[in-house]
Amino acid sequence: MFRLFEPVCFRCGSRERLNIHHKNYKNLGNETDKDLVVLCKNCHKKLHQIAEVLECGIEIATIVFLRV
Image 1: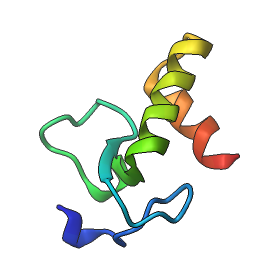
Image 2: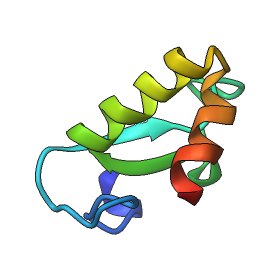
Image 3: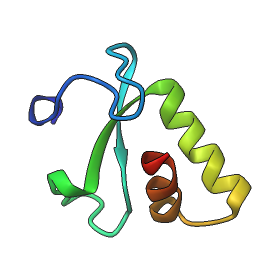
């Protein structure tokens, strides 16, 4: 799956400790490129913390986090 994406964090540009983040869970197991984004471990953790603090779903948190 990593081969489909630029090997850098979409948020900060890091090339270390990369994760694939699901923008939503609607197509879990049958994801398309549009459902996923590459984030470093730190940004991935921050995004999930935002979802928890805002008490919103991962889809909303992803929109907020990636637009900042």
